[in-house]
Image (cartoon, rainbow, N blue to C red; front, side, top):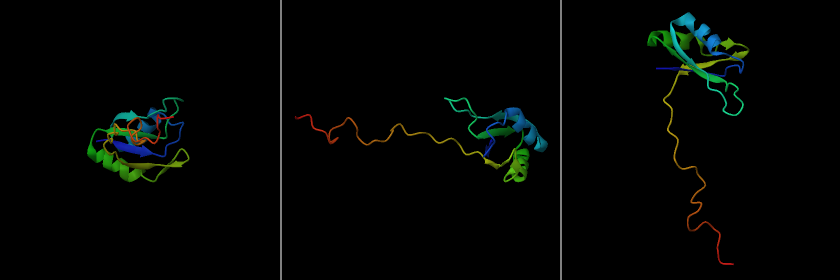
Length: 103
């Protein structure tokens, strides 16, 4: 299982986050997603710890804690939702689109 960490400073590094969570157990992995266009951190990350007991202790201690000028949101990460293959916009390109080819 993984821990979601939200409302992070945009200047936080993986090492910074690992150091904070290491007070509660062994950190296996830290991920800080970045914006594709700017390369800037997106303000949230994920931490994976060696045991669920360590994860629970970190969540209990750090959820709502102020760090680097922000109040962190820390909880169990939910599984990623699958994106729909439909992008909305109704039936664009199909009959009944509202436009007529008869001029």
